Length: 142
Image 1 (tube, helix red, strand yellow):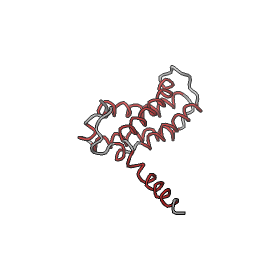
Image 2 (cartoon, helix red, strand yellow):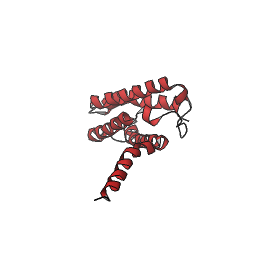
Image 3 (tube, one colour):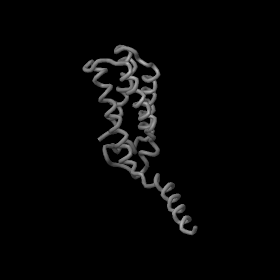
Image 4 (cartoon, helix red, strand yellow):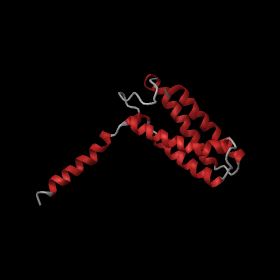
């Protein structure tokens, strides 16, 4: 029985230490890479280069919303995690960055809630979210 205690202790240490070992730069880059992939589905549809399909759009909007909600500024951009594609402006204007992130999240949630069933409705609902995404890149991405 004594051998089980060290194994359990090691498992508990690993469980609670795992979040501390996370790399915020890698985590946010992975999240943004996923976001870019989703946008590569939605963008061509919004631009009329791919046919509109309500099921495809809704599935992608659901993924985009989950991705947006997973973007936690406090966790992904702590002090000392400067670097990657993130501009220094994030840390010098954290309030502005948080506001831009919130506008994006709200725009994506609104596009999903609109449940667009045709191209015009999709463009109207997705446009603001896409604009917020681009605006954030202009100010907060190197």
